[in-house]
Image (tube, rainbow, N blue to C red; front, side, top):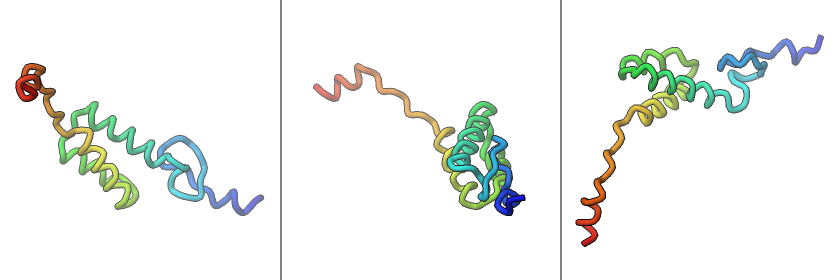
Length: 90
């Protein structure tokens, strides 16, 4: 049996791929996107986000997830009314 084949790990994103690293190429971002979708769909609080982040395998991945979750849950600015924009332009 090939020695390289025995040193492969399962990708942690859950795709079933085999890799020498923790994730297949790009699959860390795929996992972050999936986790952020859960945050948004379930309206997780900061405590829920922190709990989910603790399950990630590295500090770098936790930080990346926390930044992405913060961006996804940040309040969106209200669009300016067209009349307000016209007043400023006048």
